[in-house]
Image (cartoon, rainbow, N blue to C red):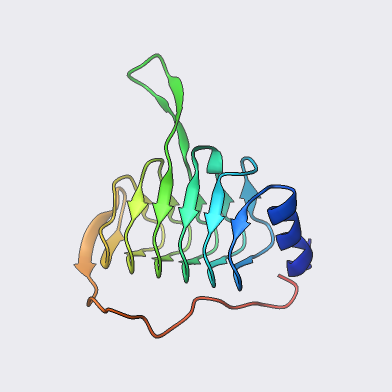
Length: 159
């Protein structure tokens, strides 16, 4: 659906997502179910992302999620007869997630963290850490700031 306004209306009213002001979800994103998705203000989810909110996904404000990112909240417990399980994913404010990264069920990503393109995040990421690789490991820490001077919000025509 090329209209951002209509798309957000559908997400809020039909799928029951909680989406903050100035947040954009670009076209070609898929969601495994309705409800249990909350996104703060001025965040961006780019094209071609897959979000599985069955276990709950909480995304903060000013979060930038690049193209092709996958966020999963459901998997199977291989030690318990492959029983299905749901575990929440929490992404705090001012996080940047690079292209084609994957966040696995039960992970929390702290404020100001960066997840490199292609990383597979299987464990919690502390605030201001930069992670990369498969599985993702800390490669550096960002300088800690008390306030951020930018917003992640942006729009593109027909996307």
